[in-house]
Image (tube, rainbow, N blue to C red; front, side, top):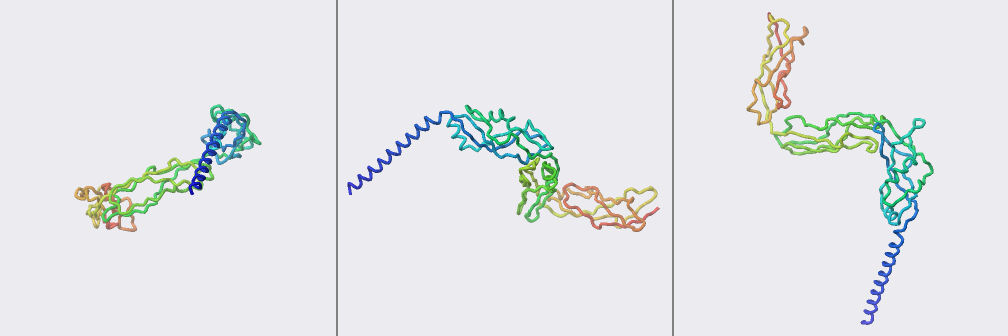
Length: 319
């Protein structure tokens, strides 16, 4: 048993020695080979820059480009693990038969500047020098933001003013065909339950055709003012306006209407009849009826959903 244990220890030691020798050999191979310069081909994905402001680029006729580069082994090794694309400039954009294109050779110096230190661009390894571009004239369209919401309040609470959305509209930009397809701005749904206090919520815009349509904003801010409310009831006199002759007197039946609405509890005791005004416009009278429609022409801004009862009054003309 003792001999068997020694044999196992010897095998482990031999494996360690072999691993060290291999590691040392690889190190010296890398150290002697990688610093040397070579000429080799590397293929890069392509992106574009310097797009004219009035254009939308949907695609180019090539997705990648192969470059013959003179560089060290270390450089080629790092490119093997890098996903950085080569950027092509559209500054020298050309047109032929109403189609846009650029020449890859026009980008030679621009590409060379993107290479690393001590890397030299030897040649562009492409079958064609012409890159055709799928370009469209950019158009713009303003679309109001509509919030899809699912909201519930604790008992007695509600909005004390309309919920605000900033911005109220979004400008979309793209080709005419794509922009015409967008008639509403998709926004994350606002979901809040059992609320009893003010809130601010940032919602993301859900883009349509993300690659080809630009949005002036990618988020909207939603604000809600919440308070506990109670019902208010006010008997308000009705005033007649636009009577053509000062000698004419108009009698109304009834001469008062009731204003109903909700009011924040904090404002309830501060609200008076004098804060309201109800009028009927005699210019709207008709010989076919003896009724006029009362309108609430003055009301505190904090009154929620004000309404009048009755919704019409009778009148008699006296001279």
